[in-house]
Amino acid sequence: MRVYIDANIFILPVISSSSRASTMKEVLSEVEGGNLSGITSSLTLDEVVWVVRCETDEGKGIATGRDMMRLPNLEFVPPRRRILSTALNQMEKHQLKPRDAIHSATMKERGLETILSDDSDFDRIDWISRPQAAEFLRKL
Image 1 (cartoon, rainbow, N blue to C red):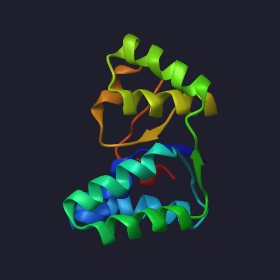
Image 2: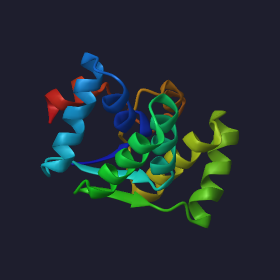
Image 3: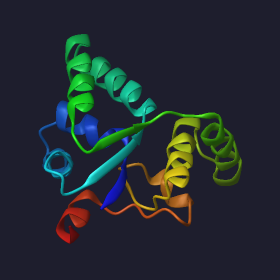
């Protein structure tokens, strides 16, 4: 199964030891094990490294970025012109922030309808399904 993975799925396991963070770590284990094919924008790496760096330190941010790059079955999609154009339309239509619009445009470009994310802004888009990570794992 192919699914779009938002930045918070990568961030929370690094900065928190909560049960929600453990669930997100499980999602990443499913990607690593090949039971799940993850797709994300290459901008997600920037977001993850920045947030982890701000919440912990620069070394941890860089290490987290490297861990993402080594994760098998995770594809990084660059924000090409067509994706950026679609993102601008998504911003207008769904009142999204630029980064969220790029994520949704990347999903549209890749034919994905499911995103793993804690960000409820994606709920404004009728063709996107945003299940809770724990619920998603139970159905895998």
